Length: 469
Image 1 (cartoon, one colour):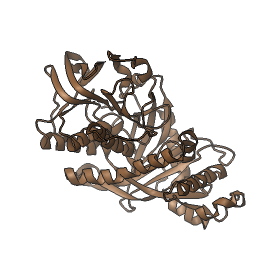
Image 2 (tube, one colour; image 1 turned 45 degrees about the vertical axis):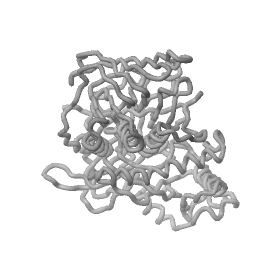
Image 3 (cartoon, one colour; image 1 turned 45 degrees about the horizontal axis):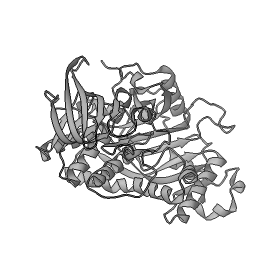
Image 4 (cartoon, rainbow, N blue to C red; image 1 turned 90 degrees about the vertical axis):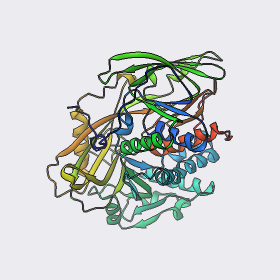
């Protein structure tokens, strides 16, 4: 049995047969990657244009990062808002945050259009903080949001926080002082070192099941315009002035190479974590290949989940300031934050429980092609997760937790820690919607919509998401 089965793939119950390329073919647009980014990009192109779309996926739909996450949906970035403002300016940073938030509407539209049945929960949930410096940074971000004309994030600070009198007076109206017990209650924690919490809209879903269901909808809805091929690896991408040639190999399920073909397209959109296996030859401009392979770096993220009674509502919580400064003497966690998701989950015999998922520990790898999806789960990372759970979460009824699932997945980070969305400056035949940066579901959706509008001819002003020139 594969040691790296996430609860999302375990629950997938896929019935659609694998379709593999058997000859050279042509398409208006080829999307490389069958994760959530590739699937939603194809969906929006089919919806917003009259172009034909082909997805090619090196393994199986949603079996990469999309099927190996904790399923938390947040319209947030991996960087502090204040940091974005310092680098890109207030206007672009405000625009980026508003674009991410607009994905909630896009997600609802997908569900309505495709009549998806994959469970989706949305709610107000919380991030917790311990450090004065982090609390002040969040308040500074709020002040900048107000300056930029958007609503601030709701923030609560504990009445017994010893740094309360050190918060700059200019931020006085940007937070509410509440009893410490309220902070702990919002965060569902027994760790009394948490002194503040922010409240934002969050959600949770099975992103693998979502992607598979949406792919099935497109195969049915757009017959003649949409095709999907799995076990199909892109090896060489040749870009010309008005078209591209993709040299691909098809593989049997055991990974043995079977055949090689050429797919021609008017545009190619890369939505893949397997970028290091691709060579790019730009026959109509400057070299792209070298810069492309420095565009994204890979980390392996580790997650675990346990089952509890179905007694609490879905939630998605973030716990920041792990093992830093002197506020936290037991530096058991190297990750800057830990995320927890709780949702109803159907296991064997149609019995529904809550599944509580925890993620945060990561491990850098030299190249994403070095990632082994069959590798055993790291005991060290499992111990980190277990230590966090026992110290932080309210689970007194479970003295010795039994983790029903332990899994890992590749996560790709761009140098800016922001998603890359748009045409390659050296040849716009190539476009990107890639870089999950730890929180990729919502920006994947926004990216797919933006790509489709670009292809339809809509023009956009410069943004944080633009590929570097």
